[in-house]
Amino acid sequence: MNTKQELTLKDIVHLAKYWWNYLYSKKTIILSIGLAGMLSGILYAYFSKKVYEAELTFALEEKSGMAGAYAGIASQFGIDIGKSSDGGAFVGDNVMELFKSRLIIENALLQPVQFSNEKELLINRYLKYAKLDEKLASKEETKHIVFTADTDRDNYTRGHDSVLHAVCKSIKKNDLTVSKADKKLNIISLKIKSRDEEFAKHFCELLAAHVRELYIETKISKARRNVELLQQKADSVETLLYREMYGAAASMDQNFNPIRTELRVPYAQKQMHVELLTTVYAELLKNLEISKLTLQKEEPIIQVIDRPIYPLPYEKPGKTTSGILGGIVAALLCILYLIIRKQYTKLMSEA
Image 1 (cartoon, rainbow, N blue to C red):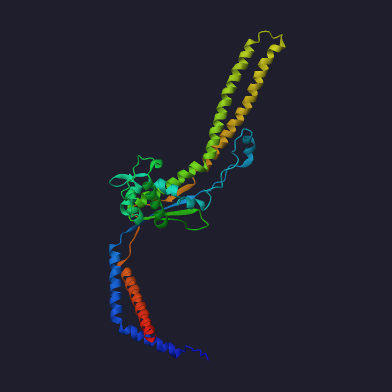
Image 2 (spheres, rainbow, N blue to C red):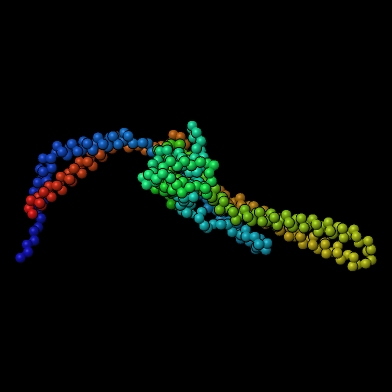
């Protein structure tokens, strides 16, 4: 016959009293462990390095292109100026992810910067205070890696690539934060944390600069090609127009006998070509100006609002807070250990 035991309020009170008396008898151990934890927390706060934070905020501009009224005219010459490149990688939150791309981070890290005492690459500055993971640090090919500004990126060794990849991964995971203060606004905040104050400031600014450069290279490349192509076509038509004008004048000078009508045909043909080329040249110039206006309206995508300035704000654990938290955590772990040991001893004695 099975009996079902119910835990009454009286049993709970007795159980709580039992454990209280047991733990109270161990108060010396608990207090000692708690004091040791408090001392550890204070020492941790004392020896902790300052972590500086560089923040750069900017407004993201999303531009609509030119109206499509001129698309039909330009398409006659094989030129597409009707629509701006509104889609792609630079729309909305996609820009935020560009800051975390390996290409952008690498370009910023491999940039030489003038620090207070010397000029050096940011990647070398980072390696001075940051530790690589144990696997990379133990390898000969990556143990004493130094990056130089005169070495092309394509000529890096396998060791250089491994270190660069590890640094980019560490920065994305621990040091880099890109966020929006409000989802309804297009104001983006870029934050870089580092134990090196100068590194944090320079890296934050360079990261934003490289994203903007990538935008200009990608977003307006189509508009720039249109301007260049239209300029070439306009120059060609202008040269041909001048040639036909001189040809018409020369044909007119050669027409010495006004009685013979057939002598006027070459001049009429030249004149017709001049009129046609004049119309084409006028349309090309109009489309060229429209393309230049489109190119101007495409940039910039980033309007910087606030830049990091010295002294940068920093984070450092407080001694009082760290001491209290260290003492509480140590005391709780000690209590948990005593309870588990007591239960284990009881079970082993009943077996």
